[in-house]
Length: 285
Image 1 (spheres, rainbow, N blue to C red):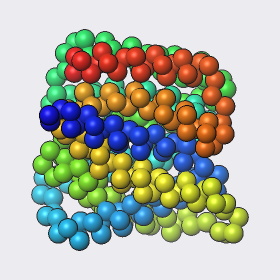
Image 2 (cartoon, helix red, strand yellow; image 1 turned 45 degrees about the vertical axis):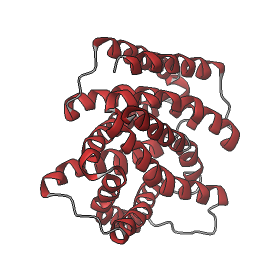
Image 3 (cartoon, one colour; image 1 turned 90 degrees about the horizontal axis):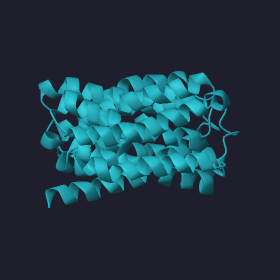
Image 4 (cartoon, rainbow, N blue to C red; image 1 turned 90 degrees about the vertical axis):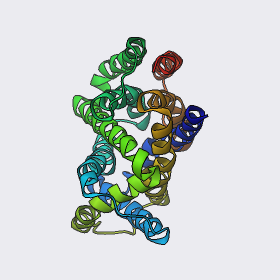
């Protein structure tokens, strides 16, 4: 029952996260990447802080601060900033396929930081899925440019670290509490950055950019983590983390429907390949 509950909670988190890159693509049409990164973190921190105060949550122990700092580095600052920068030079559909590498990164950090030990067959399926994504990234290097691809790879590594570290903390603190405390930890720096990168004019920012900012602030930065960290804590970092292999399919559909970006047959083929690996990886996690 615990594993099933973790799987269901993790799936809800993935559904919410699937809209993150298309929403970021919309947001950077009106906001600079640095301001977007800071603004989404500030908004989410205020919401998370209000929840912590209203529900009278106990402060984390001093020994948890280093782990919370890594969560902040990975999912509050690193992933949002690097993806926003990458999306200036590639479409969200191209960036979404990189998410297929996130389960492997999460599993690796789950071993290093969470003490998990998946069986050898798990790594085989994880590497196969990630290899398909890496091959796609290499083939798209000329079209998207080297820099956006490198930024997305760095974003995936930092995000995997933040996921694994947050999942380990969630076993003691709770899922929504972890992301809320991590957001509050980053709030002073993010508030300063938001003020420093404040837009010179607001009248030229369209409704789509505002809607993208709203989504990544409320859902991508807070609500999604409530379900995701709970799923990782209950079902295991390596096992539930493989659900991220489903995100390319969901994200590509959203990119086509909401942003109107083209989705090539190659993208669909790579997404199908990595999704086929999720069953095998989950079985041997």
